[in-house]
Length: 290
Image 1: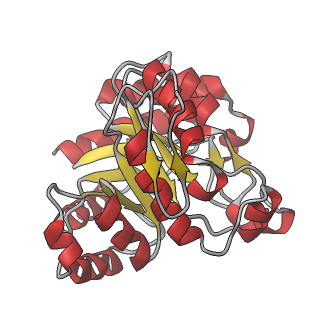
Image 2: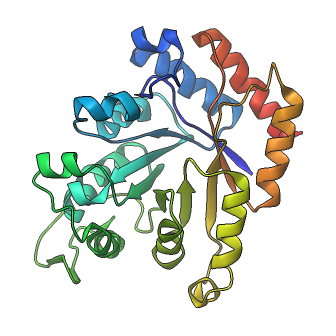
């Protein structure tokens, strides 16, 4: 089971971030990501929201750094750690816009991009961006097909239910022609979408008991049987982990995630300062390794 970082500072949820994050910037993020790479972490994350309604921000938070700009900076300061969008909202973009922008990023980072994508649920943001909210699930499914056909292709071609293109050049294109696609979400439908169309499932806000039950259900389906390669399962604990202060709890959670088949664990940590976070990062890596 490999470890990824739910990167501090870049997303700040109400009552779920440390005080020091409010004044931290890219220098602190760089230290975290460089140290995570040194410790052997698999990936770091950055999420996407363009604009959050003020009343919704009280629940979802207001701070969301743009993943394209953020990862462009971090790509120049790292060499091995992967950069995972967690998540891009498919309905906000034409697939070729993703293929061009994130394909350029994939070239900059030499093929270290992971496309974490989702259907989206914030109707006000869809309306603000003049993106259709109704039917977004079917549209997202077709967008994934279009991305499969176009990422890393200089002259992509695709014909689907919502997107169709041919006779255009996309240059530069991504290094990867089979860029990993992870599906985010917190529903059984997101898991089915991952099984049918993607390389991984990266849910959030779901307990391990429910995760295990959802996986047991989907393993009995024809779609699961039809897969030709394993599905990555990228899980995260509902509450931040404290490997220095509560190592026994961390060890129990690691074993629980392993038992339900996790291939990756997205790490959220208890921390009081940047230095404390870096110490926790090292302690978490040691706990997972032992």
